[in-house]
Length: 323
Ligand code: NAD
Image (cartoon, rainbow, N blue to C red):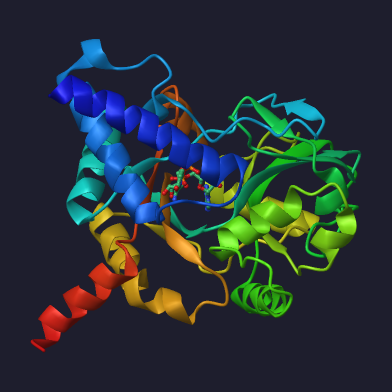
C-alpha cells in the first residue's frame, strides 16, 4: 500500500513540478503541492527502500528550457527547507542550536513569490543574468533582466561579484496584464509568480520590458573582496552598490520573536503591493552559516516559514472571532 502510494505521489509530483517550473502553468495550488510533497517525504522516511532515485523530494526546480543558453552556476542555487507552523520553527531552531552549540541571531525576510535569479557583475558592469533552473544549471535570460529598471547595469563601485534575488511581478502589473489577456481572449496567468517566470523566459525582451517587473536582492552568490561578517552586513553592502533590498527585513535574538514576526504577516501580507508566500528565516552570522552547511537540497542555516492557504487563514480568523 505504502509502496503504491510512494510510486503514485512521485509520478504525480513530477508532473506538477514540470507544469510549474518548465511550462509556468501550475495544475494545483502551492499549498496543495507542499502537502503532497510533505506526505511523500514522510513515507520515504518510513520506507527508504521504496524511495525513487529521482524523487521530487531530492530535486531543486526544473530542467532549463532548450531555447536558452545554459549557464552553470559556480555556487549552486538551492531550495529551502520548510516550516509550516510555529512548532516547526522551534524544531528548526533546535537543530541550529544543536549544530552550533549556542543560540544565534536570526534575520527574517519576506519570501517574495517570484523567480530566483542570479546576476553577475564584472568590474561593476552587469554581464550575465540567469534563472535557478535545476539548481546546477540555469537559463541565460540576461536580455530580459536588463529590462528591469531596478537592476543596475553599472554599480557604484567597479566590483566583480554575483548577487541573488527574486524577480517578481507586482500585483498591479499582474492585474493589468491579465485584464489585457482576457480582452484579447488569451488564457490569463494563474498567479504573479508564473506571470513573472513566463515573462522572463521569453526570447523577445520587448515582452519582459512591457510587463513591469521588479526585483529584491537577498544574498550574495560569489563573495566580493569586501570583508563581511554577517548576512545583514551583506545586505547593507549590496544596497550601497545600488541594488534594491527589501525594507521589511528584520533581525531578532530569539526564535520566539521570529515566530511572532512570521505570524504577524499572515494577515498584513494582503496590504503589500507584491505577493509573498512566507518568511525566510536565516542565521545571521556568516561563520555560523558555514559551520551549519548544507544538505543536498538546502542550507541548514535557513528555513522558509510557509503561510497556510488563504482559505485556512480566513477559517482560523472566523474561529478566533467566534463567528
Ligand atoms: P521554496 O520556494 O520553498 O524556497 C526557495 C526559493 O525561495 C528560492 O529559490 C528563492 O526563489 C525564494 N526566495 C524568495 N525570497 C527569498 C529570500 N528572501 N531569501 C532566499 N530565498 C528567497 O523552494 P522551491 O524549491 O522554489 O520550491 C517550491 C515552491 O514551488 C513551493 O512554494 C511549491 O509550492 C512551489 N511549487 C508549486 C507547484 C505547483 O504545482 N503548484 C509545483 C512545484 C513547486
